Image (cartoon, rainbow, N blue to C red; front, side, top):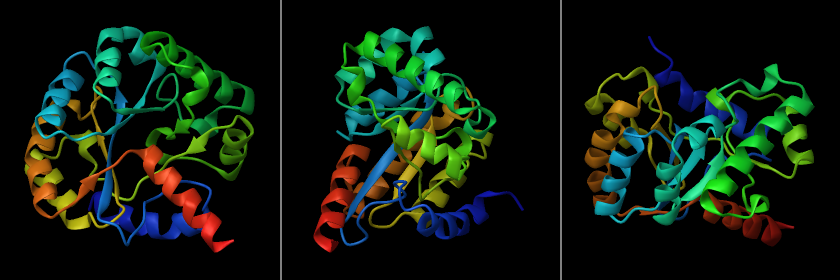
Length: 230
């Protein structure tokens, strides 16, 4: 048995233990966030953009700084299409393997690469998803100290091992519910299928009445909910 069936249980265990992370949106609202990691890629990401444009869906991208520098025109195209941008580290190195200084340097270098490429204020780039979803309490403390917002997920179809478009789509459709944060990959691993998977996935999700929102929208929603309960 692979790890895909276990990840929903991992989410259920970790999300209440680390409430400072964004794990999902409001379960009472028919909204979901579609996110993509490991890009931008010179081929896979451009193919994906065409699909997102076709269905007029806005997504959130978590980028590697080195990939932004390798494909700046692709990064610009993503931003110009109106998608939300986040950080995934400069390279795909596990955050707990770095000390605090190394982690913040990795994120700053990534933020600077995106800001320079897309003509953005680097201070607006605050959302961070740890590579492979691996973090420790120390990691979260370091992110908080740097002013970053940790973003996780609730639906992970393990598309990076390329199990097939049909299986990835089935996993997502089975697990997605109100407030889900779905993660796919448009980078080197898994990216070769991402456009076709998304093309198959979007009409099914739209037919169920889901509205696609950005990670920033979910953060704002979470802050409003927290303020009401205080």
